[in-house]
Length: 346
Image (tube, rainbow, N blue to C red):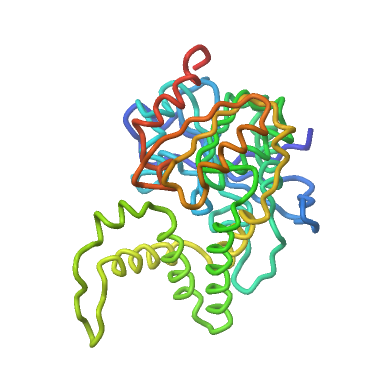
């Protein structure tokens, strides 16, 4: 076991019903010895920002989301909702009155963990590297094993990597909208997004480029049915050109994302998705894989193939107008997926 650095707790400023502030711990883990990376290279100094929230003494479930997710799963310092507030929280499918929820800011991301700075070269990050970070964080917190890892999108990829490398440290995997390798069509969309951001960096307009890349990404997250229902209205003519209703939505989402994330971090984690490869046949941890029939990024056929390669897996198929984003939104449909976590242990 690695040496353990001192925890520096941060007080929670926004109590939520059922999750008293004293049940929230947050800190920065200064990883001793640095980190040798799966794709080569080494990070000599690694900081990992983490948060643990929920019922004191209850089993721990690690919750991991997409590349824009962060450690605040169901609580934030400014009394805003967390990125998974539809799923995680008091009385939610991932019930923080019956378990503790652990998460961390991804290595290479825009949070408070180690990541690329403006103009800085940063090595390629693997989902295996994120899994290694999680294992060391568990050592740091004195957690021998997790009850489960619940991961959506990129977080599901990290869950699979952890299940392969550290099977003795997790009881179950819940993998939502993710597989053991990316689909080439999804990689094609992400490659174009990264080229947009690189072009913007070269042109000195990084924020605008990131906003445009995120707008393109948003068009792949939801279903055609939802877009048809929300954005079928006529265009409006402004400044001599037509603006479609969907343009306003995509522009707003892109601008919001660019205001909170760094272009270099987007490049790092987007690439990490497309570098993702794990050996599903080596994963023996009991796994529930959730597939969304309308998901364009992670097709149903790919999730079925993943389940066939795993040793102990069950498939849950759902239908949702939210497409790939269903893992963020479908609290009722996903309740049954999380229920087994609380049948005997929590």
